[in-house]
Image (cartoon, rainbow, N blue to C red; front, side, top):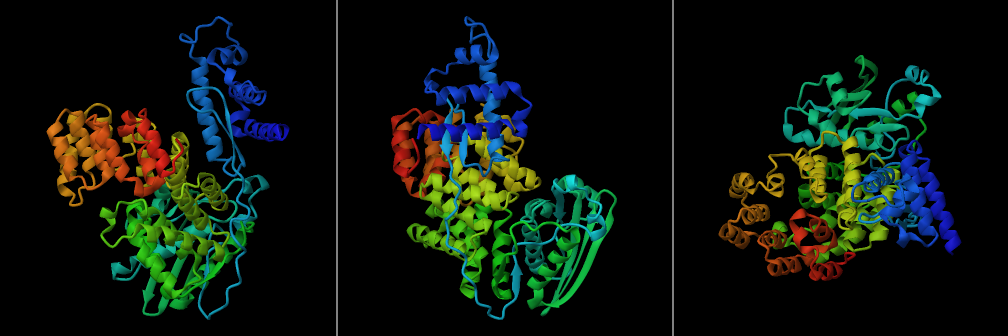
Length: 594
């Protein structure tokens, strides 16, 4: 067994050392190879800084580690490079090699591929409804351009952005329809081999603005742009679309589609096949179709329109639309996946935020049912695996959750929301903060203008203790960065203004914490009494140095589950509690590793 394990680790080691991030760096390659071989030889506990300095970096046996920081510096680089590897080309690897902080003894973790998580997709009966294409949609250019690509060029993904389709109707309330259609085109593009598509939230930064193709392409880092318009009149629909090469504004392809509204899904199919065939691209994982009605699809789009700009808040309100879509069409897999993810998120919210009718136990039950149904209907749906990862994390099934998130990324690597949920639902609760940061940076690469990715990145950088860097990604004046850097007096007026304007008072924790740091104990106690959420109260009590009341408040937060509690406990505001034995007991109660 040990021989087999050693072979697996050495195979993984060679794969890492051959990757782009390591192949040209002899120092890091030598460092990683040395510590791995020492651990496999049973000498991992002997890996001290002085030994590494002598054996790897050629230092004299009597060198002073206090004066020479080469090992610590290179270890930090090695950890970052390993994080980047597993966040990028090593996403689907079955074995993870890590170098935990505070030492030089490597850790090997097995992450098996989720081969049999779901049954095969059953054949769905045709019910005379319109076909929705959800597996292959647009990518770029006409056959003339396709003939000019060399083999080498085809190995480099095309970068393409779809600008929001312009709603030509006079009623702006119907924007959700053109926005949803834009989102579906983006989604379908993202699962074609050889295409790097910019996500919806980034593209929608240009909604309602004059469209300068070159400026949009520069900001979105895209070589090609798709733009168009939608006109919806009664039961008739007209879609205009065209594909433009950004560097010279040259139109490569255009199409106009006049159809009855019930043909919208066939139109998507027609656009997709025309563009893909002209480029002769190999289709990624085949065509995946869902059979649904216009009414069900309409409700699904309404839910996405609420959720996508701000998933943390939108998921609490989008669930009703997904549930209504499922009631109309019980075979529409994307709605099940979206509803399962919404339930998983909501079960980590405080009941005060969701109202008196909220039943946490019932929603925990429903989230399992919804995700299982999505995977039954379509075992190749990336959103379903991401939702499954959230559900399993909510249950404290960490290994299974990681397999599901990795499977989702394997199916659709450019889906930024998967990477954000992977970081927030699994990596942060497990204390793998740098990996969460790396995943969020990758999400930002795919989604460079999204406020959601900016906010997520700022929170993860705060948890990593990189306050200056976090402040640069805050979506508004960053009072949190001020008080965490010892400037509570400057943060207080900003937080007071927000607190007074917020009827929910959910931001009480930060204001009370800032008061506590500034020495305004009475004000901090007053805000703690007004704070509606136990985690906010715990934050204030931690700032006051009152560990007893801080832990009492955290105990009241246990029903929120391991994801929410584990994520929030990475906040620097709770650093003073981490050495207390009660923290280990709390983590154990909620299902987190100690």
